[in-house]
Image 1 (cartoon, rainbow, N blue to C red):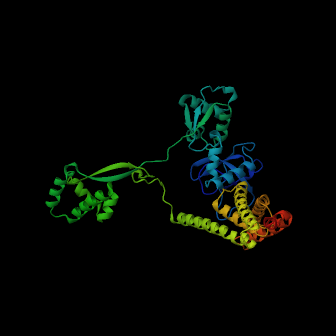
Image 2: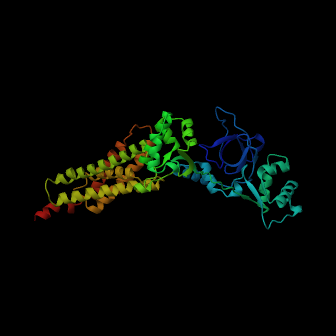
Image 3: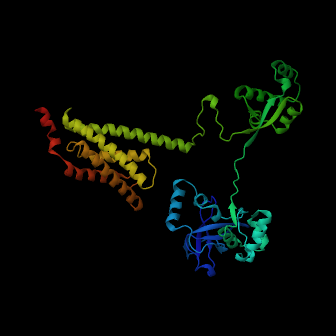
Length: 436
């Protein structure tokens, strides 16, 4: 038997381990197991799936031990973790890291600390538990590796679990700041040449070493145009080597200085409030969304022409058709967007645009026969039915990339049916009443 196991690391996918035959009767989805990752890293992972089929292409390692007698998380919670990982674009291991209490996600890096009010009753402890308790009383804290050495065995999770359950020790999470400041080498003029007169004398009296002179001139140009000059920038501009820069430093012309620089640096002096520049693909996606939004607006406006224009005049009937067209499109756009939210998606401008087009299609046969309240209902129903149809078509083998049939076909059918249900003589007689 084989198990897909989640471990509290940001791994691109969950890995599979083998369940030894002797443990097959005790494993369950949602229980913790001790697994080895790499050469000597041990983690308490949670079984997500069990399968009798061996993965292709590699030989899975066996699990070391089962840590729980019953599941600590259930299948619906694991499904929630999977949804959260997809929604927040992270890994299931990161979700587990945030969701599980520290004492349940023991790893090779875990530190075990003696509880202040721990009751070290030797009669209630096993030999292994007593050895660890005594060591904790002396040293106050132990790593998992130290416990393994004390007991002279690798699988110590069951013993540690018992100590945690008895309130003798707790797990302390090591919070390490993984961010390190970026150090960059900046170049400045030596203080003796900060004055323009001294610098002019230096340049006029320069003899030999043309590459060093070129490097100095490149530095002066960058300093004037950019202000701060980095070693990398000046060497690239002058096409010079580190040896030439070192020679200028030894002559006392230039000075190097290491400074911390922000990895997300923003030059607020120029009014730049944008932290990140969009990549080319992101710019293309943004342009695509803007184009679709403009296109939907133009289509919406043009739809008034043949819905309201079908009345062949500026009269009460054309005004009604204009109003029902607008409200149905708006209602359908909002309905599509919020129905996406109910399905677990994010609300989007593109979703609103698709829904608006469905609403325009659905209201077209009914625009001159229904009132505004009925047009809102038509837009809502058409958007929801078309949204469901679009999802069903994506699951099928039907090749309809642009969702023409779910949106235009089904949207139009819903509109025709709703026209028969909601058509009113009060609306169709508006023009005759208006003339009287």
